[in-house]
Structure formats: C-alpha cells, structure tokens
Length: 126
Image 1 (tube, rainbow, N blue to C red):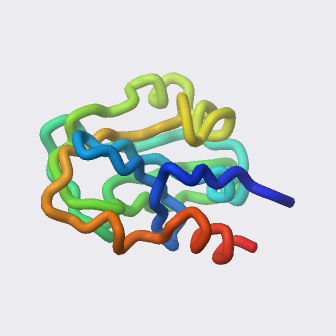
Image 2 (cartoon, one colour):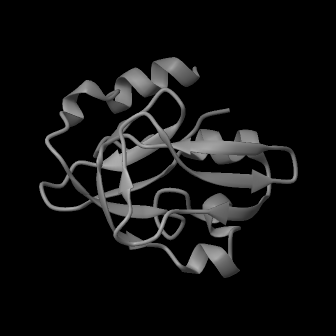
C-alpha cells in the first residue's frame, strides 16, 4: 500500500509530522501511523501554554487496537490545540495531514533539518 507523505513537512521516525513554517509549527501523525493504529477513539493533548520537548512524549492517541504515545518533533510552547479532536477523534483517520492536526507550537531553536525529509520517511515506511 502506498501512503501520502507530503513534501512540505518533516518527520520523526515515530511517525509524527511537522510543518516547517518560520512561525508556529503544526504537528500531527502521518497517514501510515493512523493506518497502523486503526480507528482512533481518543486523543489526549497538552494545553495551550504547556511546554513540549523534542523527542519526548507530549500526548496519547488511543485506537481500537492500541494506545500510543505521541512524540514531539520540536521543543516549544503549545500555542494551539485542535479541540475538534476531543469530540471527533476520527479526524485523525479521515485527514491526518489536514483537519486531523493536533498542535501548533512556537518552536525554540530546534533544527527542523535534523528531522526526516519526506523522501527519507518514505524509505522508512516502504
């Protein structure tokens, strides 16, 4: 099966993505990750104002198959949370790169270049 891997993002080996805008970065999980999880039934996310730290768990996604930690691709302050996921966690399955986004973060001086490129992530999930 072929999975969508947008070129305008960077990726963690643990299947989280981040946009690479200079301002706040948006974080979510990949199409591959949501497919592996199955139907998402619950998402636990930090609150606006919380600090998250690169490569550390920031939340949990629960599906009918498993409970998985979510890992931060960058460090920074959470500036927005996708509140729609609390009532509609299935958005993660339906549109993982769009309406299923999870957080926006004001990044610290993290180097987004250290994350996997789309091509490198495609190789990982092949």
